[in-house]
Image (cartoon, rainbow, N blue to C red):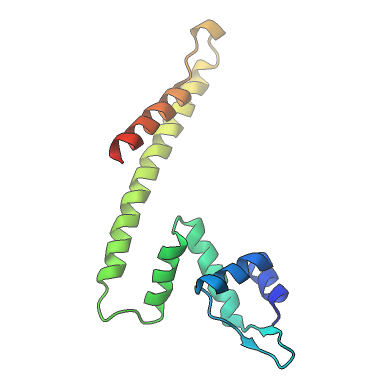
Length: 138
């Protein structure tokens, strides 16, 4: 398959595909005699995996590690376990923040029936508090 075909099947643009190649995340494809890149179906699957991992919150550096692990990786799984523990912590923080936002939105909905002068915006208060907590942690 040519570059544009792979990009279309994987749901990315051509620049993304070439960027993954430059970073070394995606192995360079074979070249045809004409010089065109010739990708196989594995390339499409790899790109889909990369995009899915990114949507789940993994950085490209973390995706590279995941791909290395999927290819056989080191003798033990210490690196994978460390990455999983760190990602779980990050997800727990996001879940807590999203829960607080959800609670704030519910309170906001409950106060929307009040006269304007009596309303408070719990969403803004929650975001401000969450932002302050993140600054303290860093």
